[in-house]
Amino acid sequence: MTQTRSPSATREAGDALVEVFWRAFQGLTKRQRALFLEKLLANLPPELLEDVEDILHAYVRREEPTRPVEDVLKELERESKDKTKAKQEPKRAVSR
Image (cartoon, rainbow, N blue to C red; front, top):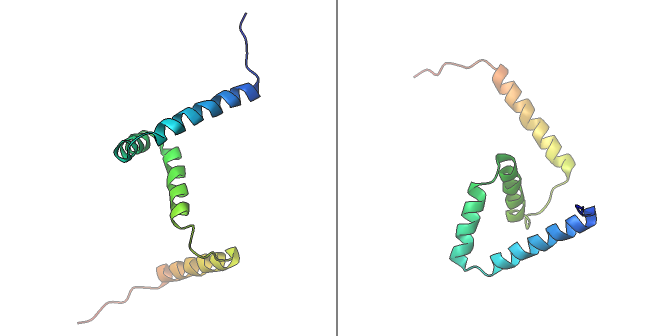
């Protein structure tokens, strides 16, 4: 008879496996950790690598002051209008 795991048992087994990997990683030397991370990042699928890049970018900038989203949206709208305007203006010849 085949025994199936409940979703919570499967999750708990997965959590235990994560804990094993985490403890093993903590036991590595600094050099070994760097090698492991290099290998891990080199073998991530592109979509997951993009997520990791986003997380790292946010982590690096975590101490920077925040801005209201409305200000950011206004700035993006201004930049977009400036780019559109620059594309529509005819280029002038530079005389020497």
